[in-house]
Length: 409
Image (cartoon, rainbow, N blue to C red; front, top):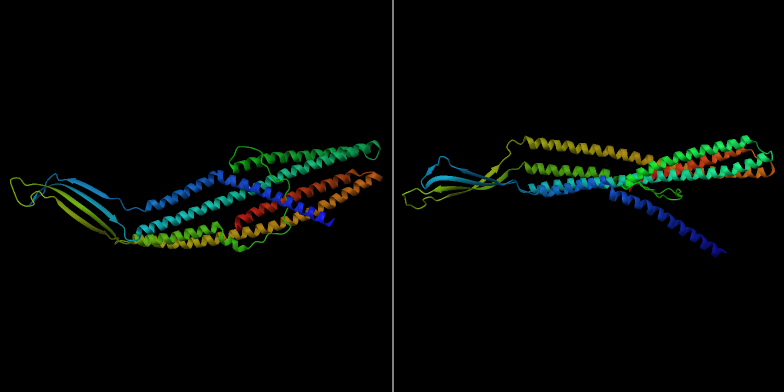
């Protein structure tokens, strides 16, 4: 007998494990679909591609300057008259300037990538929360339907009791009124479900279609462990670190651009031969290599940019600290609300069990005595309230869990 019992327990455990795993896979599938189809995520990914391409944009030299001129009034030289002039110039930034530009653009691309991570996490949170809201709406309708069927049973009992003078027709009418109220609640929930399904389909970026949810969800027996230090690695805070790094790279770039630039070039002058003269170099064209230096003597611009960058660094530090405090408060609030949801769930579970016990006592009294249908209605109303509040507790628990996962994982 013990061996059979042990095998039975193992089978139940396996079924529960694989059932939970299948349900988790269902939600994970929805999250993956939403991430793959999201126009918002796609737009941010394209922005990241643009930011990466900026690295190639800055890895270039200034434009090569080419000039050509024709002498309207030809200057005479010993070797002949100058006819035309062609000039080529190329400015070269100081050593390390292009590398500084690349580093700055790469740091901006890294910050843009963080936006992708944040957008995906936010979308996963939205999908998860909408999923559990949809679960609550569907489950509440099932509970209401079960209560309608229970009231139908009570109505049959009341009709039979009327025939044997154990109840009045007023009791039947009260039961029917209660059925009408529950039917109204169920129809309202059906409308809410359609609206929530529409929202969920929009998150998945697909055509309108029914959404499958889990049949039954419970709250874990123990609260998951969580360390608040996980918040330090949150992408929203990491983005400030990336932006802070980009400002440092920008400072290095500003210092490099404040250095002189060197230019090299070549001037070519076409010279016409002098007529009726024969000497060495007659009509010889002129080639003149050029070297130039661009010195930022008036460098107030670069000093101003440096001061601006220092201010921006302090601004980012303040923004990060403020955002960290906001996320920390939000995380602690979500943890507290999740604990409250667990307490509510356990309380409603006890209330449901006690309401069922009271219902059984009333039905047993009916076997020997007249059934008080007002008491039946009161117990049924309490039982329904406890069941709906328990579903609400489950929904709230997982809504807060979605927020916690967004903030800590």
